[in-house]
Image (tube, rainbow, N blue to C red; front, side, top):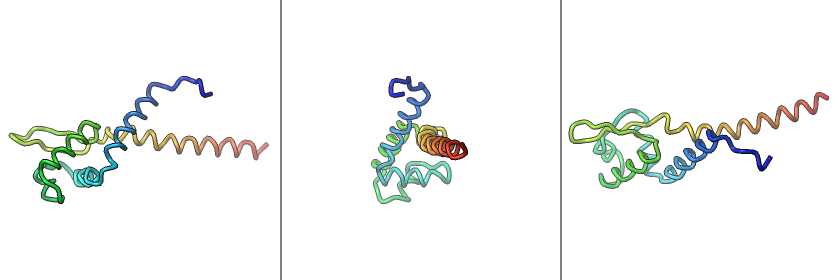
Length: 115
């Protein structure tokens, strides 16, 4: 089993999950993401709701955007940010894989008990 090839999709989800989890270790990034959960906001709107400076919020948004967790759209001279729901697909698949493993183990156990 150790030499079985890993499906490309699984590797992709693992990379996406790793990137998302790596950037979410920062409490300010998590706070910014939580604020965006309610809808689109500008950097200034986000800054007004945090204890960090506007350049710091901008840097956190850049990291979140590079990880695929937020999207930005231009609005005149500013950018408006929102959560990218597709950005969490890797994390979801990674967490689901644990559930799949648990269910498989349960089915194996239950089938063994019924014999």
